[in-house]
Length: 253
Image 1 (spheres, rainbow, N blue to C red):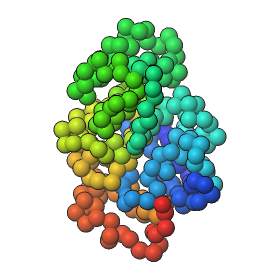
Image 2: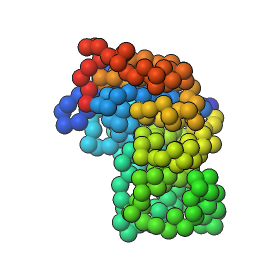
Image 3: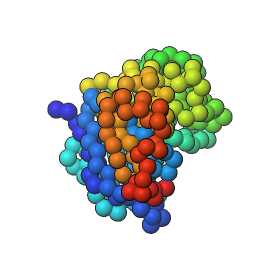
């Protein structure tokens, strides 16, 4: 049976300020959804709320996984149930090697006996090749001294290794040159399939040239104001967001 991530009339924000103003969205395994919108529309807030960042608060509404509310679960519990967030601004973790970090996360999600060390290293090597990365990359401290592109590749590497049921990728394309963008996009597209639902959050259509979404949603003023297919992303690239703006959609940060 296909698993489902459902966002129900979600009102949420930070420091008492409402940013999301009634988001409704259903993502099924096997689907790729893209959320586009201008700066300040609430895109990153949505990703943080779904993953359970404690700096953000749900004011009303719900986030459900397979019909069950996860709104009160800690981020690690959500990860254990199959959610993954590729962060817009990955943080450094000094003194912890990326390989060890991923193995600990893998054990938490899949169980300590799911894969032995040799099998895990084989999995890492397979996916570093997919991302045009040296396997020695896993021996570096998490994001310490990484370039912007390396940080984004490290996020995607974690996704490929952890194999989540639902992957939320927050502006994975930001900070990437064209070659890195193509590599990352190919890796994401290779991961898509019947056992994963993907939510891509982006400003621009350029990522969607390589990953064809099933659905594109426009987020403005904390609301989804329009939903369409992949051609909607092309229209937004051509016309921008001005043709959608009016007083009804203003006000999110």
